[in-house]
Length: 141
Ligand SMILES: [Zn+2]
Image 1 (cartoon, rainbow, N blue to C red):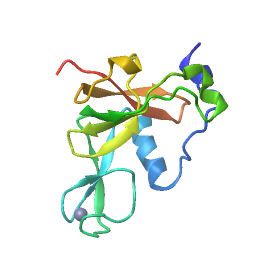
Image 2: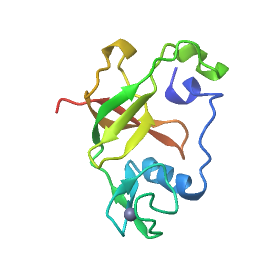
Image 3: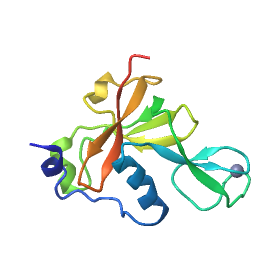
């Protein structure tokens, strides 16, 4: 089963507004986050104002794509039927080197193989031609 058919029926993010911009970078193979022009902090999820300094000025800035597993949980019984075939699976919070944390998954890694601080790097997973989800893979560093 290819990635697109495996994901059939799963809810997808709306590709509009700032979130749409975030995912459009992903479709180009780039992981970018908003970076505040006022205080320099990166942020995710996309939003208009900086939560630290309140500045409305920001730019999309490239991420190293490298980070560490911050936390995770194991889903044994998905609430949405489209995920039933994936269980058990682990939604993972990854802390990127830039300091932002994002919810994602570590590909090719069973939940019992995860560990706090595990080094990971971004690996885009194609869902549609317009949507490539930023997932992660184990990294050697
Ligand atoms: Zn700021």
